[in-house]
Length: 401
Image 1 (cartoon, rainbow, N blue to C red):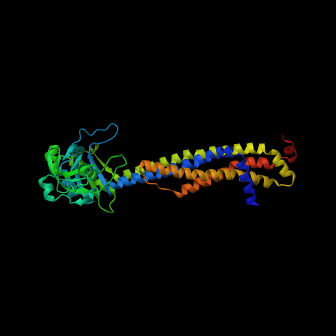
Image 2: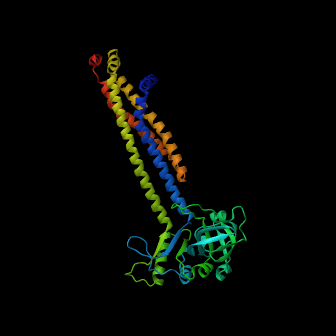
Image 3: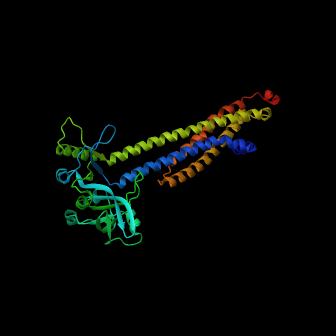
């Protein structure tokens, strides 16, 4: 009995194929939009978390000055080697702390010349930001202390300057400094802000300060917390120490900023998740619009088939059978729209994630929920036209022109 009802429903729908397709288009767009939005949102969240992880585990970044509306960092004094030494000796909660200072320079090798960022730091840099070498070696301690002109290249820098040539042992010119290449970093890729983390050159801090920057200060410290230590505690320890060293009274605001990358990553992931939910909800409105379209077309269908309904009732069809017939037609429309919408949504999500270079993370629960909701829309919005058809007076239906 059910399969016969289903066959008749498909037959009735196919008689007006174009009208039926336009009817289910709202369901198709709604389901497709929900799946595409949520999948792209999940991929974006995963990309944000991965980009933050590339910066290092349990990482905090310390800068002079405050950032935000009404705040200025121009008057804040930079850090120096005494601040660095105090961090290393007085804070037991940290695993490593590395100084860092950067500026854009012109780098030349042979006929190749390009502008990129050079960073002065020391051996602790590799532990704090989880930087690994794909070839060569790190700085020796005597190279850091004496200020030897050696450097380590990012992967993008290596490719642009050397191509297929082995860079180890070669000398490049960084501004006016002839620098020997001793290593190449493992590729990290772009950050979520579109910055290439591999277009970089690392030099010993003292070399950078003496021969490029011209002073003994630096603008940043990377701090890595010990495993198992809460980064919030490390942040509080850093703030306490720097307030003491910079002689900031209890009434004064900090003239430095400590950014906890784990907290920032969690905040950004939560924000992206909220936006994904909102976009999914907005897209879900299309399903309701599609449901209204189904109800509208089923009411039209009931009117058009009034004589058919009257004949069925007159020859003995029960009201429940007529109701089921029209309800199945509405459900078939919505389910067909749901299936097409799933395929459309997956296709759009695949194209979008590929174009945006983010992971394709399919949430089967969302797919099932969108499909189930489309079927539910068919039941709810198809029930009222079906009930109207079932309650017709067969005599009046037969008289209908």
